[in-house]
Image 1: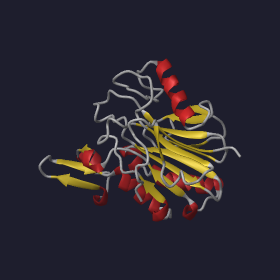
Image 2: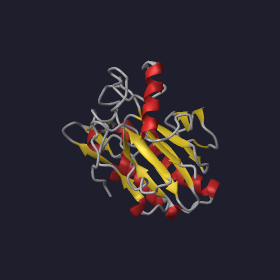
Image 3: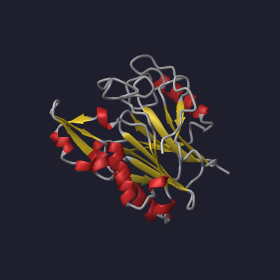
Image 4: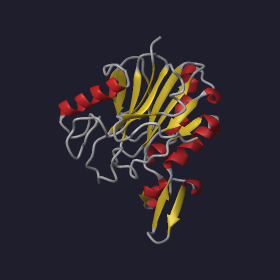
Length: 259
């Protein structure tokens, strides 16, 4: 189910994660490019700690973003992502290395995923009161990190897949994700098309990740997506491909507000 646009993307520093934001106890959102202080090519709300942007600008942008979400900027957990499928259970705010997914059942900690074309997936179990966030580029997608997210939430917190709500955030859309055979070979025919004129494949990481969630038992009615794409909306969202690698990074974020 796609959301109706209820805010002006040219002014808002974030979009809500439709479906998840229906829960009042939950913070679930993804940043846009707007409202920050960074200069080109990182204009303006660059939130990526590992970009060559000025450090003071990145930290100021993060304060702007989390203030807009009414969340303490120091109460976040994140990892320097490596396009793998390792998922870490966290119980405190921290900066990690080498994980592409985080889960927690501790209120007051926001899990963040860095994005600039790759697919952010946020998950919430309102029964067991736990959350998860993963980063799925083409490698993470083919490593089935979306399925591993559900497995990890089941194993760590006794979640039932039928109770889990998931949001597949803004990422590169199939019409813009041009790849060669070396990448396309890892995707099923349902998740790629061949363009005879360009002699290229186009892969659909959103559809692929949704299929892995469905296979694990998440209800189709509880899998939510957005109508936007990073490459197709480069003024609104950072796109690594559109900018040929010279750009900032956004954040997808999920957290349970303390009661």
